[in-house]
Image 1 (tube, rainbow, N blue to C red):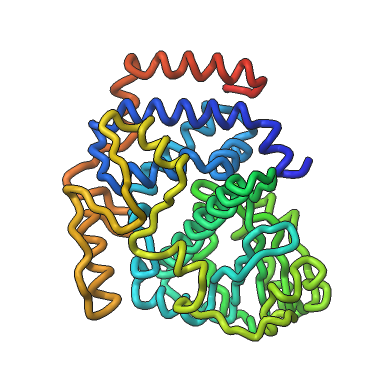
Image 2: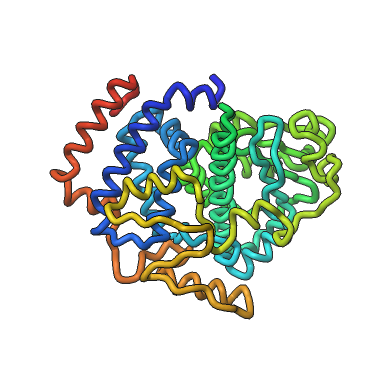
Length: 374
């Protein structure tokens, strides 16, 4: 079954998942003491049907398992400061890797999926795993935002088109044993299995030769099993049958001569800016569902709350990176928020009676939808 057809088939189950998570987050909102930006971020992912469906499918359409996985993931998002994630969140070394073009997004394929480009020749054994981790976390969150924005636009246009996944060009040109870092395997397995499941659609492998057979066995271990089933080893000419030539850079056999640069990329200008927040009406409605003292946004300008200070002029990327981390009280190394070690999962365990009605309602809706609970 096509994945977009699967989304429509399980729409009732996805709604039940959203309703249950909304009730849990709303019930524990005051205990968690979400900032305004955090609450807006949670609203964004809870109305992201593609995001919810990917977790739902990962857990074989079992509502309880998917819900628990998303709650763990929400804690991870808060601890890793994804509400404030932007290009300036990167360490200097991770920023250099991104500028070199290790991993970036470039237009869409024939199915309308955003295309990620991975140039492994920019990876070395000396690359710090934490720098690599920060880069891939940012890029995968950009992918989530981009997919959500595409679907919001389709909805506004009144079409039934839906994007659920991304595709990936993995370019092995110039890659040798010196570009393989075995420590990256558990990093990628964690990201793709626990935090961005079912996100990778087709992986197009370019410039593969017999010298890469040993290297590729290592790289495959870093990919989810479902992504490995969709590997396509293509020539540049064959790639043009999957991605329009005008959507491909000339280095990959296309007709677009433009090089990648953050400064000129609409993807990163729109979805990796320091004050990114979706202005979709669905997000505002979700905020109202999460909060009994919801606010209204008068415009699309930068906004703040009591925990955040207005942005001031800075002299360098490092200055802005520091300001963002001070404002949020967290960083991208997985540290808990300053002043609190609370998480949704731990609070749920101490509020089981309060949430019992939510569970009963969720089971009823899932039963009516015909999806599994256990």
